[in-house]
Length: 419
Ligand SMILES: [Mg+2]
Image (cartoon, rainbow, N blue to C red; front, side, top):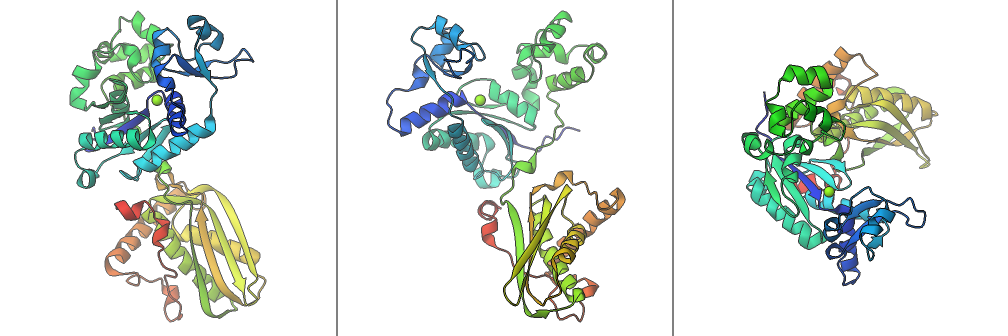
C-alpha cells in the first residue's frame, strides 16, 4: 500500500557552491555577482588537474559543463572567472540552511551538503498548506541566507526529489502520485533518479526513451535484463518508493545526561544499584521520547571529597531500553567504585541515533522486542498517570525515588518551540 498521507519536501540549493560563494561575496561587500557572469567553481588551476565543480548560468550557456577540466572550460571562454572552492563556507551555509528548515519540522533527512528532505507531515496545523509553506521557506532562505533553492513536494522522497527537478531555479513544484502521468512520464528516461549513464543506453536499446515508456514496459523483460536495478527504476517510474525517511539527522541534542546528589552517603552496592537504575529510568525515557537510542553510556560518581571518577563504554549497537542501559551502567559502576562513600551519581547517554534501527547485541532478538514493548507501555502509563504510577519493586520501601532528576527544557531547543 502506498502511503499517501505523508508530506515530504525536497530542498535543493540551486548551483550550491556558486550560490554560496555569491552570497558570501555579497555579505562582504563585493558588488560583482558571480552568478551573472561566466564563472565556475573549480579546483586548483595550476595543477592542471582542476575540474569544474559548479558553473554559473552564463558559463553554462557557453557550453561549460560540470566535471570537465578547467583547461577545456577556459577554451570555451577566455575571460572565465575561476573561483577556488571554499569548503568551510559550504559547510557553514549548509548548516545555516538546516537551522532555518528546522523551524518548520524537526525531521530533516540530509541527503548531501546542498540537498535534504523535510518531513512536513502534521506540520500543516502550524504552518498551513504545504505549498504555501514551501514558498514561505524558499523566500526566507533567499532573503535571510542570500541564495535560492528549489523545493519539491510529494508523499515520498523519490517523488519529492523528482518534483524539485521539474523546473529550476527558485521554484516550488509538486509531484503527487496522481500527477506522475502528466508531469513525470513525458520526461526523458535519464531524468529519472538512478537512471545513469550506464542504464540509459540499456533502456534505449529496449525502445525505452521516456519515463512513461519505462513505466509501461514489460516488467519481466526489465527484471530479466536489468535485475534489481531494473526493478528499482521501474518502480520509480510509477512513483513508488519505499525508502524510509532517515530521522537520524534529527538529533536535537548530542547527549542526554542526568545526575543526582544523594542526601546521604551511599556505602553499599545495593543502594547504589537502585540509584543507578533510577537514573537509567529517567534518562532512557528522555531518549525514547525523542525516538533516539544511544551508542555510548557514561557513568560518573563523586565521593565526599568531591573526587570525581567516570567511565564510559561504547557499544556496537544502539540501545534505549532501561534494562539494557542499566546493565551497562552497572558494569561501569563496578569498574570505578573503590568502596568509598558516594554522594553524587551521574549518567550520560551519547552518540544518539534514530531508534528505528535498534539492534541489541546484549539480549537476543525476542528479548529485545519484549523490552521495547515493556518500556513503551511503562512510558505511556507514566505519561498519563504520572511518574510514580509504575514503580519497580526494587524501590518499594527503599526510601529512594524511582525516577531521579528532572527534565531540562534547554535540552530540547527545537522541540520545545514546535511540538
Ligand atoms: Mg543542488
